[in-house]
Image 1 (cartoon, rainbow, N blue to C red):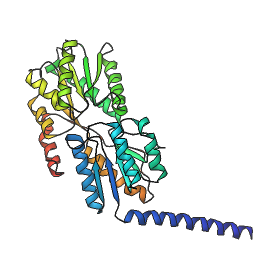
Image 2 (cartoon, rainbow, N blue to C red; image 1 turned 45 degrees about the vertical axis):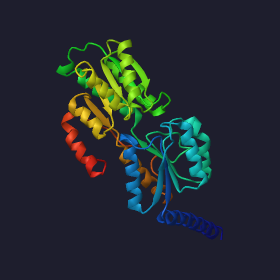
Image 3 (tube, helix red, strand yellow; image 1 turned 180 degrees about the vertical axis):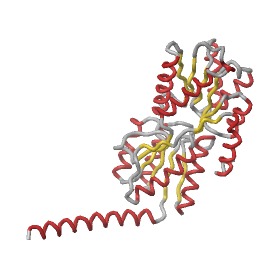
Image 4 (cartoon, rainbow, N blue to C red; image 1 turned 90 degrees about the horizontal axis):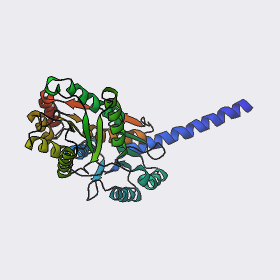
Length: 327
């Protein structure tokens, strides 16, 4: 009798779990309304992300909004928009978190409301969100360093006997970019222990990035490496290099893959650029939310990969962007 009772209880429990799974699957099958709270609208990186987000929604027959603060990288503005998304009971949230501590309260509120949260190219903790997708920060930093080191072995830069490098990122508070910078520095120091490495920010502003580079060249006359880690600041750096005729005296590694940036690679103002595939990040984020709602939790960390694009690969990459409707 005890065995029969135990089996009955087990079957009852299985039916409850199965019922929950069915309910989640049915919810996911219904049209969902998602909110993408970004840090900026338009441009090379997040313009591509918005397109990926909207393409995935169209495929699923879902709806959604892509929003960002009036001022780029306004972390308080992001928090306010996230709070609105939670209050309005969005079916899922995709976002970009530059300051994890500042976002703790609103992400906890989303958790309490059982709203799936996926972050793009940034992350907090598994307690505060379901998963994230983006450029693995350590891998990116190593890729940037390896790219610089490879150029130092080429004939064009064979006269360089030292490394004085500036790393110009979005903000100094962007945690993933700080991890990238640390990995970059560690790899460079393995080959050039006496290297001088400088970390700067441009707040996603081309003019600011250009001015920062000009100031750094005055402060560090032996500066010979520039790494951009912001797709909006990158054109400012490339334009300054081109206008000042510095392409032979600086190794310049860009970031992202707008047509403008790729043109600078072709012209030689940038030795190369490293694409992060923001389209893929946002596109996959929508499907991660679908998976979560169907009870198929994705891995917490998902690397979207990097693509080093030199002049001979520009044409092929432009074709990819055209296929995605980004040109």
